[in-house]
Image 1 (tube, rainbow, N blue to C red):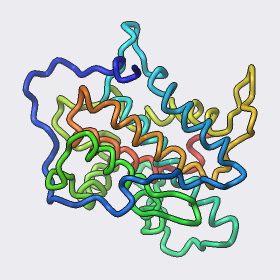
Image 2: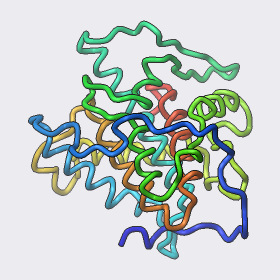
Image 3: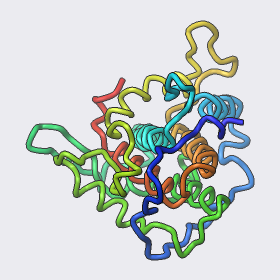
Length: 265
């Protein structure tokens, strides 16, 4: 099984997550049907989701054919967050949404990040226009299925705060957790490396043999990546405390969602 390729660093009895306020999962944490069911692009969505679940981890394999769980969740979170922004931009282009509530924050070094409730909501809540249940809902469901009690859920507001307060510092892009759970690279580096790979799967644009059902429209990228991320979060539970995995995934997704859209192809 794919879970067999994940591993942890030998860190002894390291602490788990950074604590919680017992935030319960939003409704829809255990969806029965994929939200794109019945759409013309449903087949392409199913193929892309399966490709991500089955192949994304292999992108991170070392010579020993093992994958560091924290690193893959950080990279997967980054691309899932960036996909959320791309989906929001797509719905804005249709005219169904405006840019109201979205702001650009510029760091001293000139780098720009997107902020705003409309963007946060794509990650946190179900969105019928995007045919998405939201990453938080799906990831929360995966954590519950992996044995995490609701009382141990991380505070979602603190996940956003952790990302914002680290912008422009040496810790930018790293989840705010015990150092034993530090990914091998920052989320920005992992996202830069992974986005071309994930985009190929979403677009089914394989050089040798393109996907038979065509690309997934960018409007549906948030839904497809969120479902794949939740599935891979469950697969890491055998080697990583699901509370820690949930925090890494969410903080990385929050960070990835704020990246400058011109940064990645």
